[in-house]
Length: 303
Image 1 (cartoon, rainbow, N blue to C red):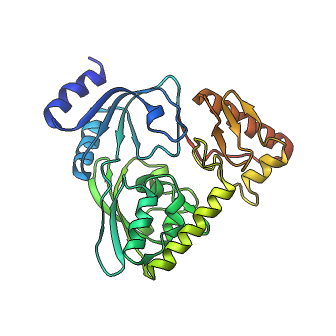
Image 2: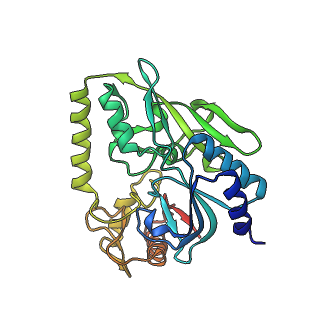
Image 3: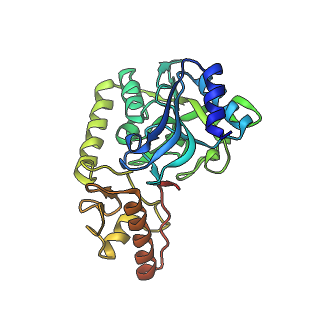
């Protein structure tokens, strides 16, 4: 019996109401709009249900791919022999104190920022234009325009193999540039708590609007992409190095280095994951040969 046959049998009994899709194209769930099918695709309705499914998957040794908005994933065109667990229904947010809010891992960061603004709480303005969800934002310590999750995060509720669900204080999450405890250790963020600063809702909105204008002016938001394709190399900017190497506008198939911002690889139309991966490799080689700097992808590549 294959793992997914056993999955079908067990999940039908343990999670009879969970949404389960078979051979679900990942191009529907990634911001690159590429990727072949995941063998099984599950959408748990709550943090508790998500944790229970993760526990079952660990017990059964099923391969798992956890995703939210899919804004940092490049999935193989051939698909993945895995159980994709989508956290999109874990999208609730609540104010828990004078300065604190709690939100689910599937809530988009843009909506989290809007929720905080409506509550008159400042500190999450930087997140308004980040395309990912809260869970992924925590895992990679997402940031922009001088702000990052580390500055406002106080704790997360996470499922950990062999430990179940536990709250972890932010100072124990090893948060640094595009890194957290979950970058190198298995586990899944389910909820997060933030400590923010009371502020004027109008001023908070004005700052978010200003940052949104800057993004639209400088970033190719009109095309599918995964945001910044490469991590910032020490002492440099990836986009600047790529432009310096004459790669702005360079194209492989439907994948292109953005004309607007060389730090973005975009799906300019009809790109495959193979095109994008080939372009990433070409950029890395060209930049290294011309500058001696090795660019590390910020995008998570799922073979």
